[in-house]
Image 1 (cartoon, rainbow, N blue to C red):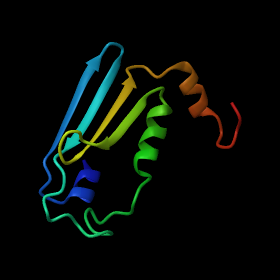
Image 2 (cartoon, rainbow, N blue to C red; image 1 turned 90 degrees about the vertical axis):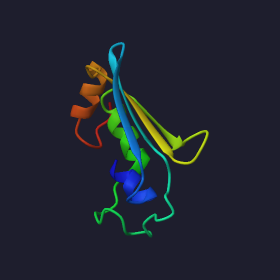
Image 3 (cartoon, rainbow, N blue to C red; image 1 turned 45 degrees about the horizontal axis):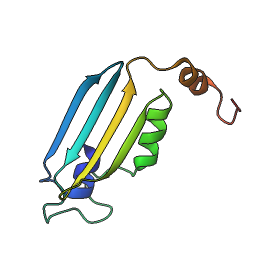
Image 4 (cartoon, rainbow, N blue to C red; image 1 turned 120 degrees about the vertical axis):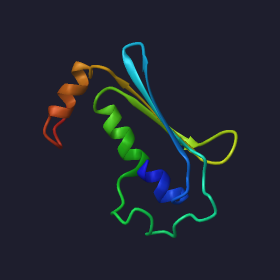
Length: 104
């Protein structure tokens, strides 16, 4: 949600949906694109930048999930969909518990 405002402007419309899919949760966030008043680089939420899509993918992967992100088709805007297991896999839990830099 924050990224939609940061990149598309304060008047962007955003739809978020959370739904059960088998043994997982699907979280989808879709915006309708810039409204012509998108903030200039460095403006928007006023907070520091994050790790973007790569960071979302890494966090999802840490619990055995996935993230797909990109421009909406058809039409303007952007879509992010995460598929997250309702219960993290044991291998994901083990790898997230390992010290940084440790090989698994």
